[in-house]
Picture 1: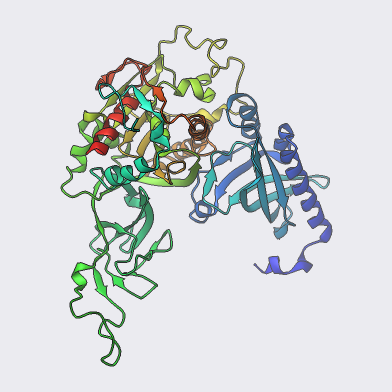
Picture 2: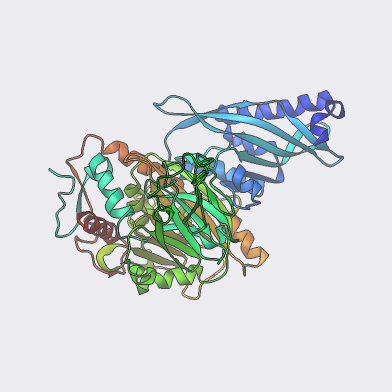
Length: 165
Length: 408
């Protein structure tokens, strides 16, 4: 925990780069550029949407669980071709990141978010609030997720979740 | 016309009012959920230690399920016998006794009232009425029975045993799937914009699966051309359907040009999602079972799930998913179950459409309370078993069981 409370330990330029990564990530989803979404991850990355209760209880099953980028691409092709649902879109509000740890290999960060969902013909509603728990790799030029665990505050999902958070 | 104006001969036409009528909803609470049914409460593994409790709902009624110091599981209404306050506020935890925070009335783990704050008053003044008898003010108790680690409760006394209530065919499937040490891999809540019965109809509807769910059809997880069957228990209450995907007699019925859900140009970049192992000697690759009124057990490849759909008024309901593994699983098998669980739940490749379609029907039937749906696929009878799953007999059976209970 001390790292979270110690702003001196984190380079502001790094914080800004993680913030930009998160903003671009949210933008990509909200603007329906979902084919680009897997590119935020390295090839063998893990992406999981879970709930606070399941996360705290170490439950391995996710609402969505991708163990590599191919599985993320499959999520996107399924929502384009295979799955049926009412047209809807998201609007993410993403907080500034907190860097939890930093090593040569990876940066661990945590970021709060809120996601509004607008279903065709309805008013926007708060679909989900939660936190991103990230392991990020830096090749010197780009940051990419090695793991992004989306922990939803509520145990309850309304109707369905098909677009990634 | 009353909402209960069924064609009593066969249950093949159902008035849409059953999904929205307020009076019917109240009657259903009394006759179905508080009536002669066994309602799913919990998994035993959710309450491993004495004092472990969880709260949930039987119909609209808040219920505490708790393991006592003898290791027995008890269930009681989560409502203090004093003024009706919730006794347990948290949804799970561990307690030595149950104490209502409002006036400190305390109950033992069987729900008996053990102490009352200031029962004798203070310094000889105040105190409970002289005729007050603590033994008459327990928490309202449910009958509880367990089978294969599943805990059921009933508000009705003199119920047949669980095993008699389910019948031998239903018990065989429960034992096949859960008659071993099981492990909880995850639990999700899923809010639905529709009446709970629409979801139970969907669970029992063997006709829709390969037509609504492209993922199921395209990747041949379930097609009506596969070997399988659908059965209902005596009186229609419970149902079981199963199929064996290695025995498919498809002769072009799922032509992609005619069946929307069949996609011949759709593939996965990571087909390991669907990797499975033959877990059961019988070869069953899909089994869906409903236990009246609102509980379901499901095997889809190696994903084992439980579902409980709880009514939240006539127009809304809340679904809980439990995802299970077996303690005997190898690490590879466990990993396959976890990966395959992408098929189920609120974000499941196959399950998500069921959540959506419940809301669509609820909206579609608005204003059509006096009109009726048609359940004539496979005829109008409720046979006990059919080898064709191109059949709505299990849905007709649901209405038969429901109607008999409502008419009491």
